[in-house]
Length: 124
Image (cartoon, rainbow, N blue to C red):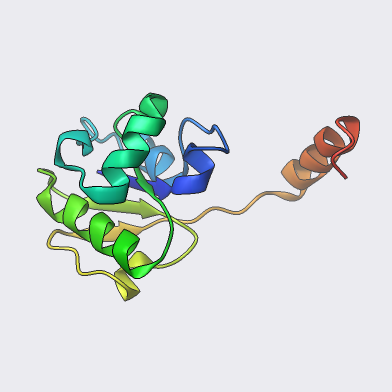
């Protein structure tokens, strides 16, 4: 299962994040689909953003949202969980499966390309 940064997947409109990239690079056979196990706010997010697919968005970091995320992860049938969120979710929720966290950094070249992209669109 790949847990990604929720805002990146929803209003950021990204289709994948660091967790999916790591799963693909390590040749995971398939990603577990958390949608039928989703509860509360997670379930609502899948309804509002149906194109998210099999990724699990970590939406919000309030107590109720974290509880919904924990329940959804723990109910989903999978062998392991790859977390690609900016915060270390394992500090806040208990996950009942093997878990690892992945991160990424932009190269100097990517930073320059991003700045150029944002300037062209008059965002910065």
